Image 1 (cartoon, one colour):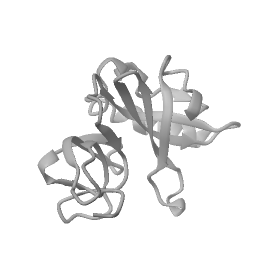
Image 2 (image 1 turned 45 degrees about the vertical axis):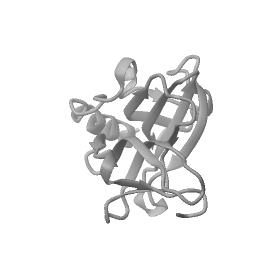
Image 3 (image 1 turned 90 degrees about the vertical axis):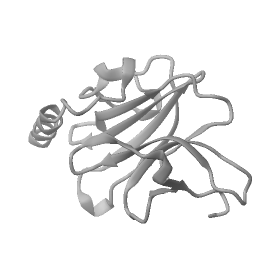
Length: 164
């Protein structure tokens, strides 16, 4: 319980920088949920995927979850907190409205310049297997400051299925 209070305090203390990209979902930053696949905070949205973005040795696991509803999407940056049941707290969020057919959200397989180890979230249009993906928008997950930050889409490179 102390861990939950400390972590919630940490998230609440930096909430000024959080929610900047959350649009109409800004009110869920700092809220808790227990089931990532049936998240009551996102009524009408279907869970698409979730990725663990921390090393198992880092202690408290952090995640990126993608939810879809029609042409809209929400990406949640969340962390698991201690409790009697599996409990997550929303650290930050990105809302994407009106995603054009053929575009996809990537939370893995992208890098910024020559920097390794960053977690990049990108709205991409996959090309054929031998070409690189076109990146429309991108954000980096700052795990030290517990927030999502904009990234220059021109400096982001995303791998295709065959590793190109």
